[in-house]
Length: 214
Image (cartoon, rainbow, N blue to C red; front, side, top):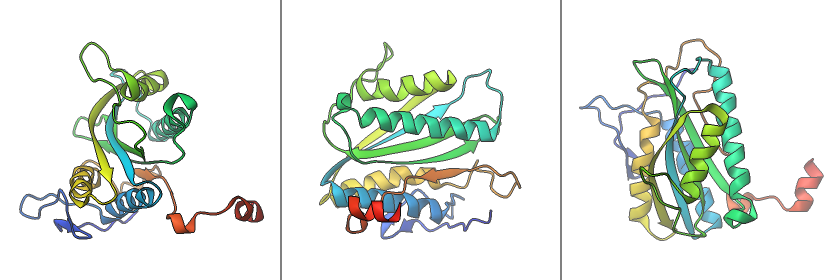
């Protein structure tokens, strides 16, 4: 797969984590997918939460790209099902995006984000004694599937009219678009990234329209 590469430090008027002088290049396609999903979600909700986490496999993990990508897909489905349950206030729309990387040690890992309506600002505690709340949910689901570990990176609360908060969030997430460690062009047929497909609000289908095209 041929992917366009860019050293531009600005994307759609927003500063990103790229630099030609430092050799930090990014994939604009990944930036565009992230941008559109966050903007689309904000079209539905005036306040959203964006959470970024990193997923790692256990030390004894047997490397298999297709199997690993099946695991990340199952993980996302499980987390979205949980967030849509009554226990988590029935989140109606949850966006996501992930990229797969393998560093010099050839140990695959995923950088992932979720975005959803801000229904509560307290997502739980992060501590050495054990995580609670939503953090515990994200951690326990990955452990159930793989036995691996979860690194809870950061969360952002975004109001639709708060441009600075959006820019800070997007700069942080632009790290997912870096070219380093993604290994495109190897000829192997596995996915290096994937994103949700939430449509803009004005394109949302009615129930009748969905039935007509089913």
